[in-house]
Image 1 (spheres, one colour):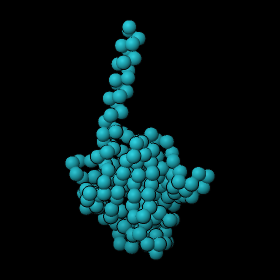
Image 2: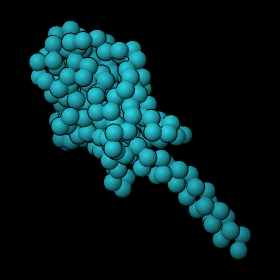
Image 3: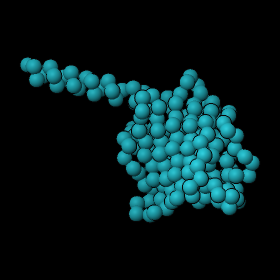
Image 4: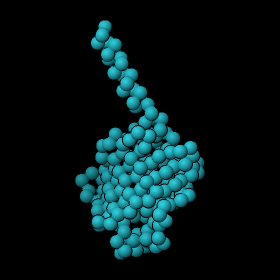
Length: 173
């Protein structure tokens, strides 16, 4: 009898630990529009650009480069769309998507390719941590919600240079 009570208590503790994360992740879903970037992104450095020319310019000035420089790895994306399906979270910026497993396991969009986009995600309290890497570029977004405001602390690094910005988004849909 004591073993059964202990087992039920353990199952309840595990269930209660998992429920808040699942509830929080669904709140992140939707399309988000940038309202503020702190510090602001300098013009011409690949901040919100989606063109190959802007990415090339950013690379020439020591910033993020590569095929995702203007989207997934942009310093301050204008619009972000987040969807949740089971334990997978998808972030779409421009035409590019990054898919995360919310279990801290690394996913790759092209297994065995050193230039592939690699992603992983995990919860720390009520904050969702998204880690991503492509080639020599890596980043981490820490997402938190306050009402209908999404705050993203975005750390990006490429070639030894790094930036950290606090991005504020309002829910667009």
